[in-house]
Image (cartoon, rainbow, N blue to C red):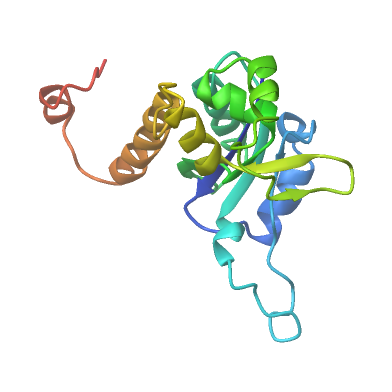
Length: 186
């Protein structure tokens, strides 16, 4: 399965990191992409959504979302100074992505999308890709009695782990304290 998500970085990529990213064999397949700030911010002011500069867009094939995030984070570590501190899921999804997130079969969801009450598409790309608001699709499925979680368990685990690793980076926490907190420390 291919999973689409965002990896949140501690800070935006520098030009040097972007160059290293572009020439790194582990990132050559194009499964992870970035947005770089313009060279001259006075001529090209940053967009209102500067959070995009701290997020990598990922489309990774893996058996689970957690495996996909782990693969992306491992690849990102090839670039000096880049640190993943969180993970996000896009607000808009294709029907296949909605089926994947909800655990509903793709065929079943395609049939449900023909229902009059199914959420209308948010947009359609020029290539024919139809995107739906995930929160509306999830609400529709929940109203039908489907057990769709607010946030996928794999996303919770990945995000909390990345935040913990970031918080522990440079801190002086003893292995004994981490063990006492329940973390498996070798």
